[in-house]
Image 1: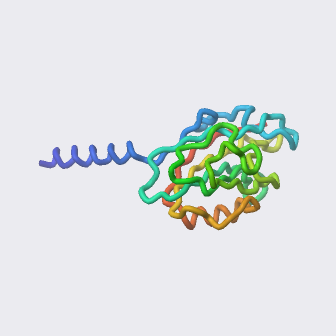
Image 2: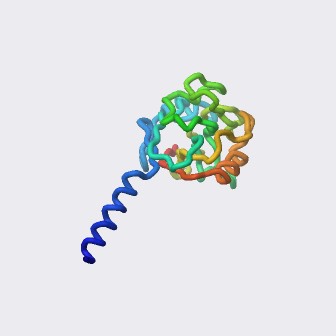
Image 3: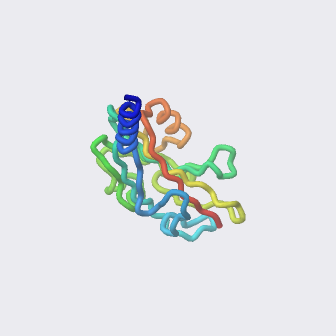
Length: 182
């Protein structure tokens, strides 16, 4: 009887793990260096500044919208560095194509999506650009499943304000972390 209970528990755990909220990217991989395509072009960096492709699956039940953030917790600012924020992504979306973060209002974003202001001072994607000589920084690409269709923010929203709203409305997060140093 105990063996049947153990096997049933393991089967339930396996089913749960198979349905975990996940994020993937063809442009970024967990624990791997970022490509030059996702490196900023400016501040002494010479990259292509192209936002990565992002896909997600198995969002939590009740998800009404998504947000995507790219954040560097290692930036020497005392508060990290927001490289990309996209929110009010419809619940029907399953990803963002490569290059969707070009300019504010990028046509490749799902209708209704909003890109907030990065710490570069603009709306849209701003690639990796850590200081010369620092150890490789971590770039956390996070997809947030939210309990609301719309956050009451616009393209001027700072990463800190968006972070506050995301934490208040989060049903779950899926994250991958890539690295970049110079």
